[in-house]
Amino acid sequence: MASALYKQVVTLVTSYVGAEKGPGVVERQLKQCSASEDTFAAADLGKIVNFINAAARLYVPDKAKAAEMAEKLKAMAG
Image (cartoon, rainbow, N blue to C red; front, side):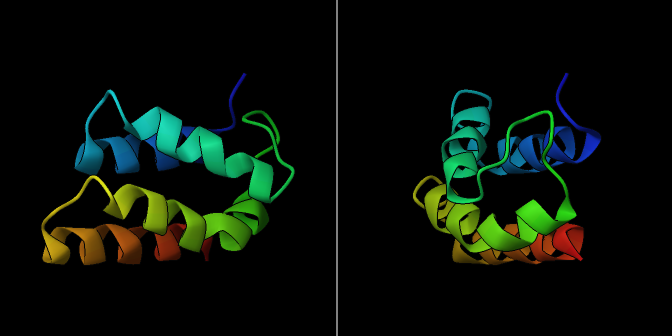
């Protein structure tokens, strides 16, 4: 079962990029930190937050919204 933090990150990213892209954006970045959906923790998010932001920005044309999403993700990472 996916960790609570993983679910929160997917929910946040999905709210900016849409349901079709959100889960995939986050899932593809997990390989950068050697975590799984089940073991994903704040330390893992700290390692890949920039990768998630870069990938998600491809689908967020509004720079202000992309910056807002980035700030929220960084806050989640601690």
